[in-house]
Image (cartoon, rainbow, N blue to C red; front, side, top):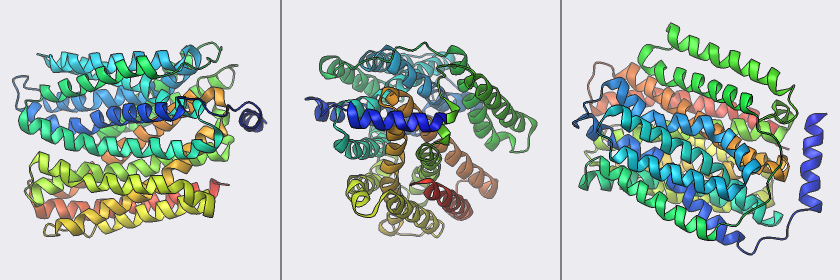
Length: 472
């Protein structure tokens, strides 16, 4: 009943009160896409800085290195849904500026860090800022643009995330070739500052949703994500059957149950569990998670494969995967027209089919595979993601009332980050299991990739069947 009310309310919002379009709607979409791409680029570029930080005067332990990389992602993932709710409650422009300010400040703090704890603190602050800003980057255009333009806006926003992630590798590789690791944080801090100034001058304000904040829900939901990500991160090192890892997953389930029980009793929960009774929300959440799990399984090994098997430098490896961004961007931009012609169900099925095929083809890549042939595999897979994501993300946004745009965008982001962690965990485990004791050889790496990508391809294909069935 509650799900039907949410759906009916969303329909009424679209048909009776949707604005014809804000005069700065298209300009805002471009600005928000730049912000989203920059925030995603920071997450991608950080992996390239690990060797430099490991050799630096900070002398971080292996565990500290994991936290330096993952602190941003953990803060990012945990605060995305609360960030979206805060945007709906306090105003989207204000939270966007606060988020960009924290991102900038955290990046500059990391650049100036002389100790490991200070570097981790900077990463946490930057990740929190990214979590506050990112839901606004999708929620704001969805409120400003006319309904007919929203599917294309989602496609543009989706493409910006992919381009940002790949450009993060390109820019990160170039910066780290020329500067010490601090230069990476200085570059992104400067980018955040520029975006902050432009957003302050040009981003419009939108109405707020006058509801009380759900502090208990925010804490419980963050705890669920922390426990889940902790299990995924530690599973590669401790083993998936270790007490710590199983305890983390068990805690995530137990806290999730508590959250559902508490949320069902609250009048204005942070994330109403009943929204998952809406087929579009279920399909979008699971679909985004699965798509990014497959994508980040590839991102995890791309740089390693190119540097080990082909002898590329970091800058060369980053530039070498740029064609993937072109493939995903073209696919995302064509997705809307294909949906109008064939329907969302067929386009999403086609997208997941292409991603599965790309992942399966990746399992055939060997140490002597020529680069032009190799790059076709991730390009095909990411083109599939580009086809599927606009319908999946847009489905979440359109299924919910317009005044919950921030929460819908936060849910999109949380699904993406959890999926990314799943993909990295799966491929990291495969590489560790097959290549343990073999050294960083091209043959060992290729052998580990074979089994890892076959497993990921099967999981993506099976999950895609379920997702497509849920799409109307």
